[in-house]
Image (cartoon, rainbow, N blue to C red; front, side, top):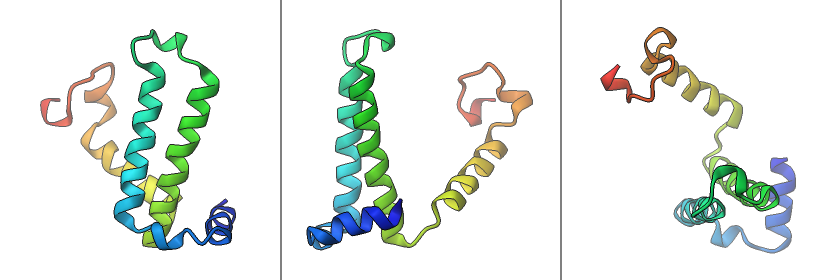
Length: 103
């Protein structure tokens, strides 16, 4: 998938625009567009086609940002899951929305 993403970018000579700051901004903007799909609606009333499209945009920018730093995405995600497991032990966090420092 990353190779396809790089090829798509490179065929258009867009790498020059894909610095980490602009990728992070694009990611944030796409996340806002995803949020907009749900704005003023019940979650179940959001258009699933638009949710899918906007989520794909968010993921594409997130993957490009990770790639910019040379990070292994599965490893990055596993490390975060592990840190979250330490901060939110299941026996304390189960059925609670409290932040880790309030558990």
